[in-house]
Image (cartoon, rainbow, N blue to C red):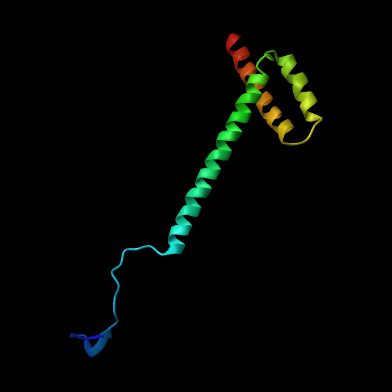
Length: 109
């Protein structure tokens, strides 16, 4: 242990000690674990988003043949009678298609 003396004109002189200091730059295991856990959660989140986009794109492809407003409304009525994530996805895709049909019909007028 080294001894250090400090004084300043606004304070009294004091004598203290310096404990052994470490200038090591190694990370602790908890920091590494926290970082790897963070990146794992980011990867998982990105994978889930990619899967959700792929499922939505597949639903769009499956419903591609339904172009008229009447067909889309009929499918929406059928989807409204069902619950669950697939029905919710189908309703979202059909609502998007219906909005596209409405936009294109307004442009044509």
